[in-house]
Image 1 (cartoon, one colour):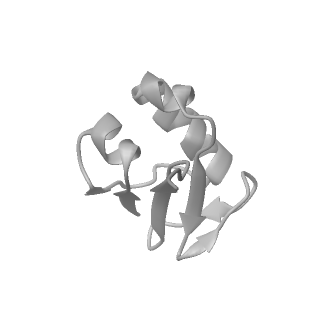
Image 2 (tube, rainbow, N blue to C red; image 1 turned 45 degrees about the horizontal axis):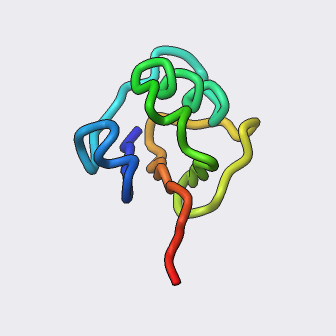
Length: 78
């Protein structure tokens, strides 16, 4: 799968995009847990939306190797 990071998530994981090979079936919730374990600062975000193939996804959505997954941090501004 291709992983895209935007805003503060890009700073936390140290890159804007990367490729990952899925070893087993994985849901968005599994990925969220894995990423928070790998990058603990992600847990500090109030919200972290995840989109799969340009559609916001709930934690029970399955991810496939060919998917594009985006990490979308909370948005602020005024």
